[in-house]
Image 1 (cartoon, chains in turn brown, green):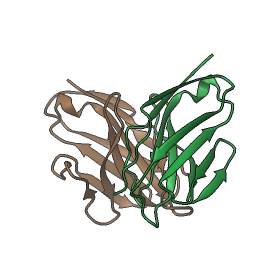
Image 2 (cartoon, rainbow over the protein chains, first blue to last red):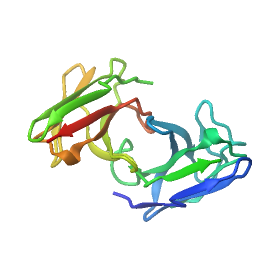
Image 3 (cartoon, helix red, strand yellow):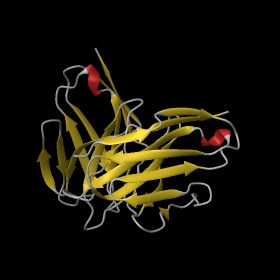
Image 4 (cartoon, rainbow over the protein chains, first blue to last red):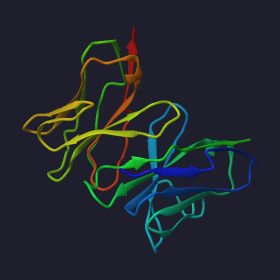
Length: 116
Length: 107
């Protein structure tokens, strides 16, 4: 398994500002993903964070709004840019360890974001 | 992409066995079937994964028929702490979550 931490755990932000969320893993992993979970809803995949190259975004998500970095095999950031109240959500990082089946993912505790 | 369908909610009582069935008619040959559990205010937690027949671990059992178009997660003797949302997924490489099944265990 992998131990994943996210910072911040929660934040309250003003409309129009940006917030960068960090995801740190205690071991090297192959894949890192970012999800969003709105209140009472299921998880929606935002993008796959690729090490050393641009992230791969899912339909409905764009780099200008959600820039992602992955400088190495244990760390990634997601920025929520020019926030609006509709961005209020929980943002989760997940990883696929180097060992084991690629379908097994481990999730971080999430970052709870409220935009006023 | 294989789509999954599972009941939106289920109720059970402590000590009962709970079976949650998921249908995935478009499952591909290389897809694995994976179940996750999510408690409120936490990220999803991996429960069990299988490809065919039956898989059992310390938490649950997973039954997969020969055609693999469905799967059943079995939770033996549930307790109040098993109240959570359970997700069935059949994607490869990246996980696409469906709506999940909200299990409520009552005393």
